Image (cartoon, rainbow, N blue to C red; front, side, top):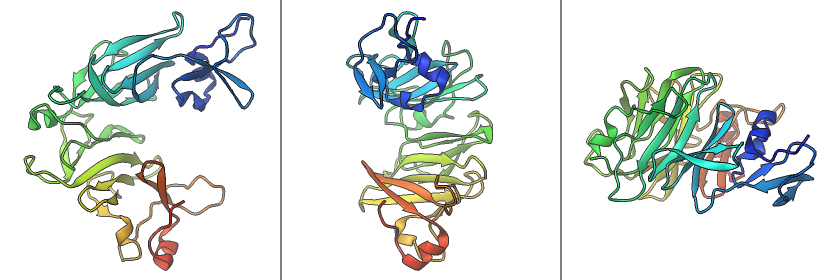
Length: 291
C-alpha cells in the first residue's frame, strides 16, 4: 500500500499533534512518498503549506482540515490533490472555526483583515459544509460600524445552542438560541465608550455549568479572570488580585493529573501561565505562583 502524507490520514487516527499545521504525519509504510520534512519521535512529517499564509485557527470538519487565516479567509485541504483551496471569507481575518461533533454545523468568527476593512457580521454559521454562511452576531458588527476585531468565541459542549462571544470593547455576550439573539452579560452598555478590558479566551466546563473568561486590563497591565457558575448569565471576578479573599479564585475543572485536586490554568501573556490549585490552598497561600 502506498504511503499517504495527507492530513486526513492523521485525522482518521486521531493524532492530535496534527495541530502543527505546517507538517503532516505519514501514516503508512512507504512505496512512493514525498521526502520527510522533519522526523519527530521516530515519525516522518511532511510539509503541506500553504505558502505565505498566517494561520490563526484550525478545525477538523467532516474528516477534513480547515484553517482560518489572518487576511485570506478559510482554506480547506484537498487530500486527493495535495493542495489547499480557498473556501470562504476571502480577504478576511478568521479568528476561530468551531465544528459541532454532530457534523451538522460549523461556526466561524470573522473580522476585517485590517482597518479600514470591514465585516458584515462577527459570527457566521454554516450547515452545508461551508458552501453558504449565515450571519449570527445579533448586530454587534453593525454597532461598531462593521469595523474592529472580534474577540473569543465558545460553544457549550453540553448545549450546542449556548454560545459566548467577545464583541469589541471589553464585552461578553451570551446566546441561548444558537445565535439568533444575544444578551450582553459583561462590559459597558454604551458601545461608544472605550474599555480597558480585553477578553482573550473563553472556556465552558465539559461537565458542569461553569464557564471561565480570561484576558487583560490594558491600562493596569494586569491579567484578569472571570467565572460564571450559571452557564454565563452572571459573573464574578477571579483575578489574581482577589485571591485569598472571600471571592476565592479557583475553578472546578480537572487539572489533568491523576488524583490531583481541581484547578484552572489561565494564560497571562505569551508563554506565561498561572494555575490555581484549589480554593483552600489559594486562601492559605495567597496569590498563585507561575507554573
